[in-house]
Image (cartoon, rainbow, N blue to C red; front, side):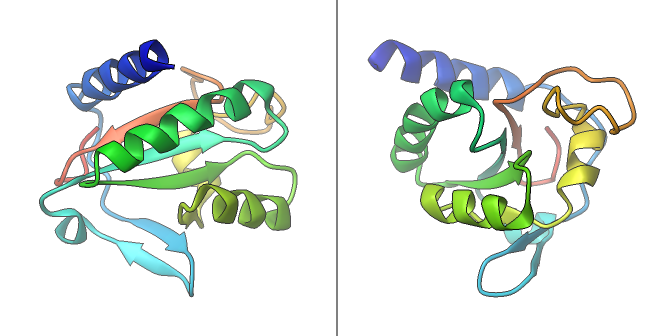
Length: 141
């Protein structure tokens, strides 16, 4: 819905205004592992989408997320999976047409975002899935 898209846009703008520690690089898979550094991000933002294929809230959120991605062509979205297996994560990233974060556990712990099922992760949890973190060209949130 339009209302959901507006809220998503406002959420993304608010997230972009925060400033946690700088992220040096994000390794993603696609046609092979690639490392995206802040230099690779020059001129546009990157969204880290924390989600899972088994999560009903994620599946309800994703159509709006994809619509916003298509409207904001200068933004790249990367899927940070909480799926049960590497195969499920790969299939979901392909269905969403997003590169898959290779080091998902590290990103989850760094930003404090993981599914409730993932109790083994360390650190202070600030959110569950679905969630999005928007990084600016310098790697800051």
